Length: 281
Ligand code: 13P
Picture 1 (spheres, helix red, strand yellow):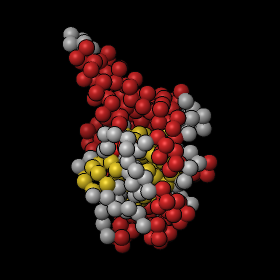
Picture 2 (tube, rainbow, N blue to C red):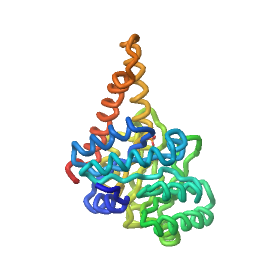
Picture 3 (cartoon, rainbow, N blue to C red):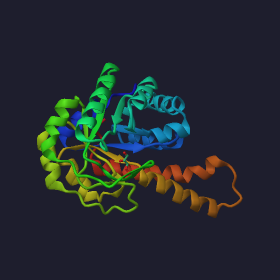
């Protein structure tokens, strides 16, 4: 089916207390693993693409590949710009046909974050696309941006949401980008206050580092989108190393990549199960 907007899959997720996985994809191998798994499990899914991935695979080529794979699928697929940094990123993503965009102005002082996010929301809405904004800072490293992290203040949430016109809110309550192990501790009381302050779907960034039971506690409290990137990258690379070592004479890249594709598909399957989105499409 054609790409759908984020609000279309995230509103029911928040209402029914499950979350949609947003998996960071860098090439066709990732896109196939993510969308084919969602299709098999009848789950809505988001394909998340950073500007770094777009620079690597092509600002036109990668979105076109996602669109083609989504159109052949029977489950709703969202093509999401992850961590857009400025209005030019938003403009290019809208032109490339993204159905959801994020502006990450969270490193700016509050009023500057609001001003930039509001402009991005206006651009996205004019194109019929939903916008994710970020309040507070998610710690760790995303592409080349390093952040010390700053928890979201629940009391500023209603003002931020109202002043920006965002559709989806990325909040900081303990998860960290690019963790190699699942041991992040979420501040669940803070998450409850954030969720009480807005009916918008909430986003948990840094999903790779969050233990299963914490992810489920978060979805029960209003998190409707969970981002997973690092675990896919690390899994793909680890299995590729093993395959190359086990088959030193093989040169057919389709055979060498297949075990990695299967391995990330297994991660996607496991995460979709944890998030409760299986059978929702
Ligand atoms: P991880 O790479 O830590 O899973 O985080 C992904 C993410 O939040 C993308 O925005």
